Length: 262
Image 1 (cartoon, rainbow, N blue to C red):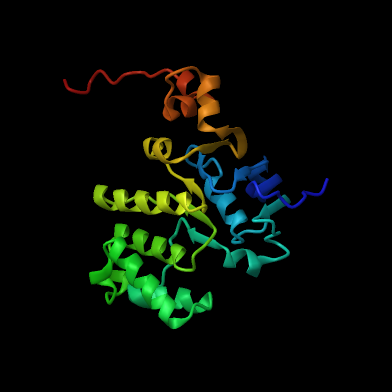
Image 2 (tube, helix red, strand yellow):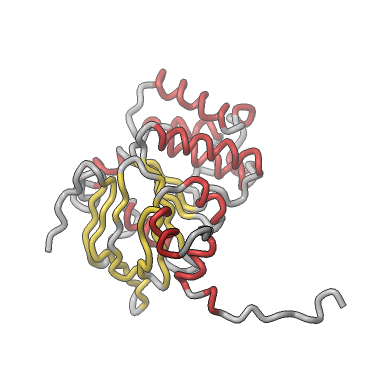
């Protein structure tokens, strides 16, 4: 069955999306449905297939099988049109280490065909907002990991995307920077943008996301509004408890290390 173009209510939809590496199936027939204007948390244990999924969705990897629609477009048939509408913070950040922070943003602006004046103004605003204005002339090779993460986020926002893919955006950044990033993402979603985010910090996802999908061993094992998942799991459940229950970790024996503290 061919996947129809998603209606105006969906920013992203996949059908039976799979990706294999030889005999290993990293993503196994997942059906994602991401509403437009939503903050979608894509969760899973290490090695569950989250980053591979994002690489398929953003055109870095060709799916082994299945179909994708992003903002009504097929990223395999129309890759350039899709990329113009996306902002991406990948797992490896994809920055040019031998360019300065400002030069990295200038390069992104040129790729997207932004007028020089627009690019300069947006870059200035983003660097100030993310606390990088004083380091725009510093080589990225000399940035800390947290600074690189914020610069990658600035590059993702620069072309004014409609859909953001963020792979662990809060990893390695301090509390103040995390607060700035959360405000930026909330403002983006509040203006009708869609955020697709992976994070191991479930407390942050619980506060920001309105929908989640949980992947385990390459398969989508839960998906929907957080409110609905809470209703199914029982009143008062946190996202962490829901997550652990779904992936089966809650049934594992806790064990103890009695020698600690002796």
